[in-house]
Amino acid sequence: MPEAFFIRDGERFLPTELTRGPWDPGAQHGGPPAALLGTALEQCEPRPDVMVARVTLEILRPIPIAPLTVETRMLRSGRSVQFVGGSLLSGGEEIVRAHAVRIRTVDVDVPEPQSAPPPGPEQGTAPRFFPTGVEVGYHTAMEGSFVRGNFTDLGSAIAWMRMRYPLIAGEPVSPLARVLIAADSGNGVSAALDYRRWIFINPDLTVHLHRYPVGEWVCLDAETIPTRRGVGLATSTLHDLQGPIGRGLQSLFIADRESSRQKK
Image 1 (cartoon, rainbow, N blue to C red):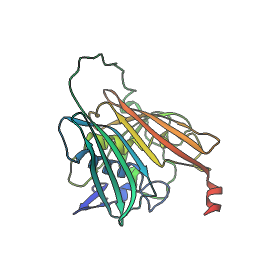
Image 2 (tube, rainbow, N blue to C red):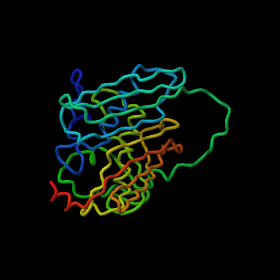
Image 3 (cartoon, rainbow, N blue to C red):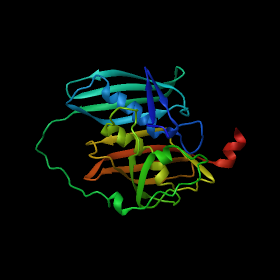
Image 4 (cartoon, rainbow, N blue to C red):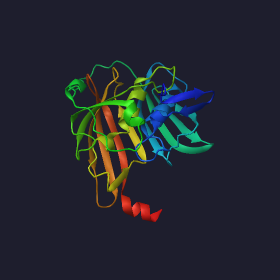
């Protein structure tokens, strides 16, 4: 069994089978690459007084289980707000593009709304995965607990998730990475369509945070909205064990599986 989602090899990152997604045995789930690139955006010209308040990732093509390289660049560094860009490349080809907004944190005397988190993971049930055709992948590398719904149910869901393995072998996992690796599952945990007939793929992921999570568990209170135009939206309110931390958004491409196979 691999020891992490990725192995660092000089300037490259070698994905292990823990990154494998449910649809193609040769492609990664979006969560681990999102966490890898998000970590790099956080570490670009780091400052201790800023946090990542928003990350947007655009998945330009399927992410292969193959060596990856990461590039980041500071787009603008102001005193209070920074903009950072980054890319994930395979064989020199850009496959994921990302932008992050980092905001300076200060103590301000304003009222902060208080909201309790959903029931904790100890009150949930284990995930019921649909057949993926592989024994090891993202679905086994992440621990889950559903307090409403499940992968094989249709409709909104509340699911707690945490990593069973480090993101990069031998390196600590940042709170931001814990959010991003889970947030890309919003459309999966809250599927509104039968996966046996439909595909509902997210070409992007945007996560807004007003604070980083405390602890290992991240909760997705998620809903998927399909439309007859073949375009959908998955939204997730994100929590840790102390309360809400932000929101996740995914645009969805929806298509009939059989029609998609015939067009290939």
